[in-house]
Length: 80
Image 1 (cartoon, rainbow, N blue to C red):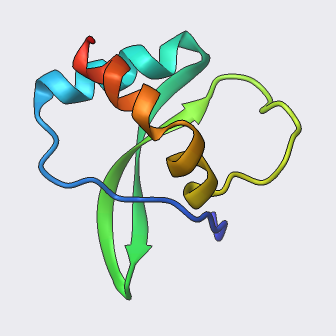
Image 2 (cartoon, rainbow, N blue to C red):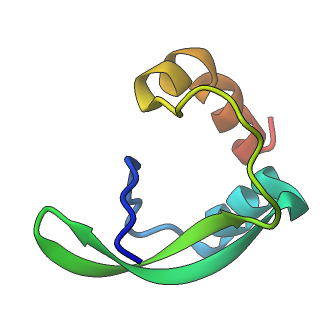
Image 3 (tube, one colour):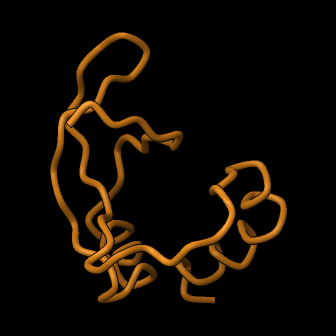
């Protein structure tokens, strides 16, 4: 409660894509529902929460992920 993270909210995700995202995240994460503030409004979101203590490392950076990992991520969820 009261925590803050940088991330992205996806809207209109089909059941098929949601299942592929869950497969991508594997059993290291569980899906949880929470209320989050987005641009001053409250929305309900499903989030992937680590089942154990997250490994240490650099702070997650969306721009870096997009540059280094997005292409492979999209291939995996498309089943390519």
